[in-house]
Image 1 (cartoon, rainbow, N blue to C red):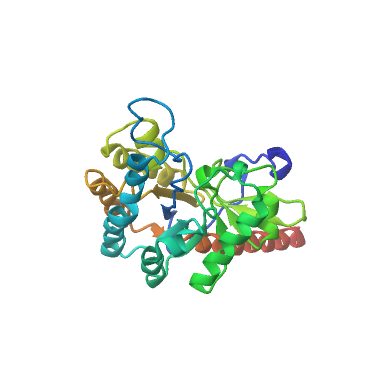
Image 2: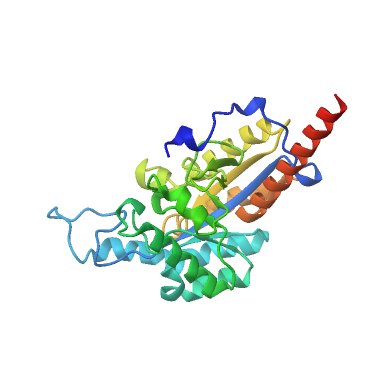
Length: 303
């Protein structure tokens, strides 16, 4: 199915009002991407180019650059979550649950949500059997946590034409690859059932800022606060969702961590902001859809 077959264009001012509890305007969810990079494959991203060109194998410098995030950077980020007592979402490769079990256990101990993120860090368009990879990821998370994951984030946001259909058929309730809105959006699937897309971000994402655009760590703070202020303004009439995305090997680096902490400190001080997980946003959205449908039915009956 092509994009406009999956969703209908909907200008945001024309939609029914979404209401968060307690008078909140904005639901913020913070996603930590934890990945396993296969040393026998080209690295998904690089910080150093090889001095003589080519694609060295094994690529120890770039593999180690990422591995630092799992050995050290994640634990720095975790201190921030603990200090401000906010829930985290672990977007995790299924293979990580056996390769990095201490990370998974730390997230489980804090009741973080586990978000399917492919079985290993690889473009979903290059996976030999996409349905199998989705199933393996779900089974790995369920085996570790005792619960099947409800949400999915493709590695690098990659999908095939069939991904939403395969996810819905595998029991997933939401996806966040379709970064096209500030409110949750339903995507049609071939089964006739929809799968919800929850707002993610390419802009407030440390990969884009640090690795592609080559900004300093402070850009994460500046951009996140600017994003927050505009979304907070937009939400005066109808709630919005804001995502913050970090990777342990990027924002967990010593020279960047403080800028992530400053963002969380600022947003935590705002009384009309709630920190939620993706599945809590999902359940709230479903409840709002029911409320809006009932209100519409009452209005029509009264007319």
